[in-house]
Image 1: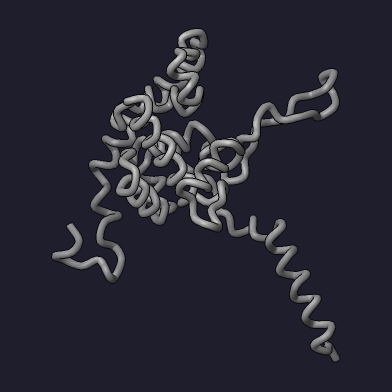
Image 2: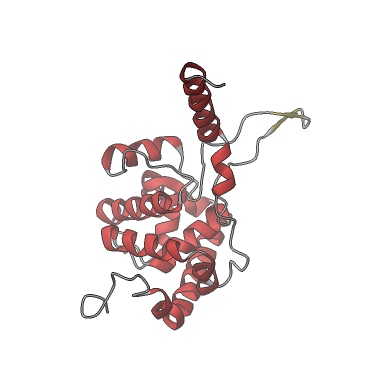
Length: 214
């Protein structure tokens, strides 16, 4: 017979094990077709809600947010930069602390958490990752003057940091400029696709009824 004295420690150990690693079985798989934002949202309709909430809070369009995530992580929740190798053999340090859907680095994430993040925000959860992207771009708009409708410049500031963007560091890195153009092109494609399917994801909840829902 399992007594209360034994059951409680077992319960605590079980919860800790779930928090440490077991929860990963609940992580949504990356979308099958990442070239079509409508298909992405059909697989993960709640992501649409998260992106709309972030846009309403910070101003970055839904299509731009999703293009950022596609570039940064290919919609993989726990991804990190691959480790470098010592003497081309031994796994060594990672080149950065980037982590999660938005590949937010530790310092930027700490700033976000202090300024705008919720108490339990995690880089591995899409709602928080999209809110982070919106927050970061809002500051790029506020302090650097980048339009929230300019995904190429927003991504350059996201990748290089706002200070690096002001210095024009990206001008010495053609590969970064190429990626930023790729993100902008994808944002444009996603936006066009979204115009055709957005209505699918609006007013789908029981509490979203006319005239309170467009």
